[in-house]
Length: 284
Length: 284
Image 1 (tube, each protein chain N blue to C red):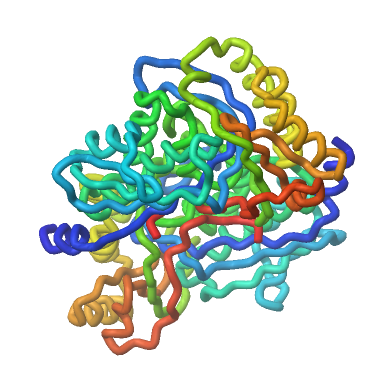
Image 2 (tube, rainbow over the protein chains, first blue to last red; image 1 turned 90 degrees about the vertical axis):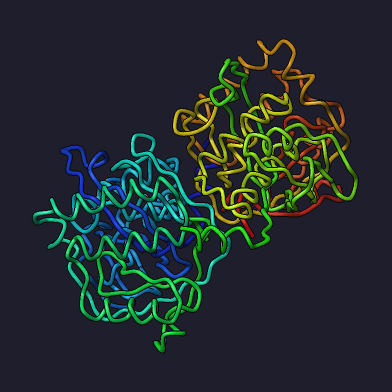
């Protein structure tokens, strides 16, 4: 397979990884990082991150032009045995609940696989990026959701097949979002999560009884209140969308509100507009 | 949830289901149709079928303008408790290895779910369509592959999560195909399949050792010979693509040849051109 290996390693590729919006989740710790993670549900957006790699003497990450420490990417490339500079460009705000660290890790894994001729399967790459994200402490379920796209239901923590995944089939759907600022995922998921986890488990059970998109948003609103994660700015925006006849929820974990259709526009906000991404993380 | 149910059932939607090209497969019978099926690998194409439904007094199927008997669709809609006329339009040739019967069944399930407010998950709908296809005897693994898109590796027979699925991550890839005529899937998968299954199992094992797209094509060529399914016209085309420096294989089960990139054009054929579909079956 030498000819094939050479041909495959000579190409330069990029990956696109959708921004995952988590509506609700529960935390499940496990000593095996591929089995640790979260259960929950959310949306994958056509806004997200793109990742490119070029060979380098050490692993480096450049995010929107600036060198950054991004442990999820460093761990991913290290696991794959690749030394490269990762150039990450984000069309979503950083630390605002849009899974930039997980997306960068998964994108780096996909690009490394193709560009360096590693010949791993998708599930293997998702496993590497998920474990890197969990060990970095920056996320618990984003990578699995981002790989799938659409409206993922994460029925078990961790990576498939043990971490069972399902989804709500939806039409192409306009999504609007506004971000009021950042939050540290690590601080929240590293702390006491009993209340949050109970609320997340309840929401997932209720969604599975009748899995639809509008119900996902409604259960996400309840979760944000029960888990005591709802910010005042997000609450104001969600209430305004509700009064305008729309459906909105807070993106976990950011001070960010996401609405279906024209919900935020109708409520007088000036949102970013995108769609639900149907395909999940992919080479482009 | 009355308001939501009403809103969801009032819309008219269509589904697109990619045409799956199976490169190799093995047959696994089981009395539970959700566990019966095939293992194997192939491609999902941006050519395929679209499906729409309208309420009717009985279940009917219209394929490219003509009323047809299509048991996979009838069984799917019957399982879901929906009486409707399914209008199927195919951009791939029928009975040529492009999974029209499975695609129509899965498309009908996706549309019925949304248009009739059934609120099933993707996995549930794939299970219904797969079982219908298996019971109709028209296919064994198309539905699962079509739901996933991309380059699926079907590691176990049947529907996920028990029927484990993985995939080879690929860039957007031009695909060419020519179809020389039809074959009956039912006749082949209903007969003696020991040789075929041994060849398919061997190919899957070899692909998992190094899962790449070019290797998938090479192993598919070997499978077609070993399983004694290679037609003379397909062999001629595959050899011509090989001599032109391209990669081609036969689509199971049709007298059809599929090539990467410009393989068939380079060999002097006048192929249909499409791409690998990255997203899988979806509402549009």
